[in-house]
Each structure stands twice: as structure tokens, then as C-alpha cells.
Length: 117
Length: 119
Image 1 (cartoon, rainbow over the protein chains, first blue to last red):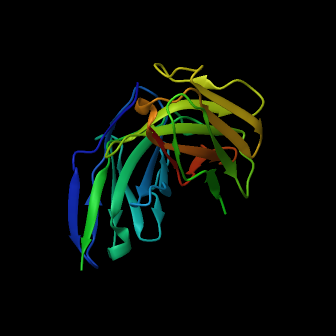
Image 2 (image 1 turned 120 degrees about the horizontal axis):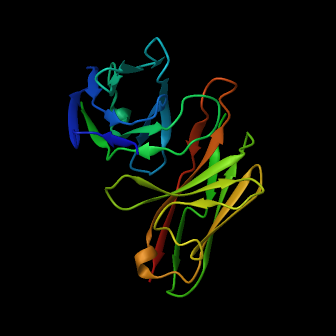
């Protein structure tokens, strides 16, 4: 079974500052995929970034980067230069495999990020 | 690219009626779609995995006779809540898997969700 833990129910960050959202995971699968999604108040889930467990380099997508530390089983999301539009719930999720194919996601409880002007 | 739509975005119905929710991938074909349920201020819980042309796979505790899923084409999956009751009121979200290629897992792109209220 897979488990995702997000220990920060809520976070505040000043506009233009960087912020790190924590995510730790537990799995017995030899390979897995890690995802981050953003959910604004409108409810839609927006895909942000993906990291495969065998990827050598940390994933980056624009202002988003994933700090993947396999030995610590952590996959923290770093948002640089925060913007007011970044205020939302952020969910960390994992799939049981990182190879080709479609796999169910297990989600964490989420972190509510509030960006302060 | 990778746009997923859901219809309706919200629905209110009387107890005992059935409600159908559609999930469409607009600009890609999705062999696999997923249906999730989200209660207020909680995370997403997977209800079922839907593969085109075959029966859906339901998660433990999800009543397959109550939540009917049909994946008739590579761009459309439907969830029908049969004989809905107030406890079925929730936010239902679908996702469609965009193929990741030969070495990468597919990425799930989500629809905007459907808020169901059963009176």
C-alpha cells in the first residue's frame, strides 16, 4: 500500500518569495511516480509537475521544482517567486509505477497555501 | 492541450433519482479514466478505474451497482449515481490519462468537477 503524508495543513508566503511544501511517502513498490497538483477554490485539479523514482535529476517546470530525496522518501514542491494566483490547495500524489502505463493515484491530505501581498 | 471537461458542473436532485455525469477528454484519447470523490476540505478518494471497452474496476467499499461507470469511447466516460441519497452529496472529479510514452507513466489530467447535492 502507498501512503502520502503532507504535514503542513496551511502555509503563508510573502509575494515574490519562495516556498517549500513538504511531502513524504511510503511504499514498497520498487518504482513509482510522484505528482503535484494544485486545486484553486474553483475545484479543478491542475497538474504541476512529475518525478519518476528512477529519474536522476529533480524535475522542474517553470517556477515549480520538485526536491526529490529518495533515501528520505520525500518529494517537496518548491515554488519560486510566489504570485497571488498561487494561493490554492496543493496535493502531493503517487502512482505505483513510473514506467509506461496509467496507474491510480494516492493523494495526500493537501496543504493550503496563502500568498500575502 | 490535455483538456478534460465534465458536465454538469453542478446538479441538485431529489432523493431517489439518478444522476449522470459525463467526463470528456477534448484534445486527446484516453484509454483510462478515473473517477474520484472529494468531501469538503478533504483529499481525493479514488472510486474506480475506467478502461475503454471494458468493465470498470471499483475500489474497496464503493458500490458498483450504485455508481455505474461506462467508458464507451476513448474520449468519454460517464458516472451514473443511481437512486441518489443525501449521503451521496459530494464533489465528483474525473481524470483522463494522457499517455506518457514508452518510458514515462501517464499523467492524469482532471476535469473541473461536478458538485452533486441530493435533497
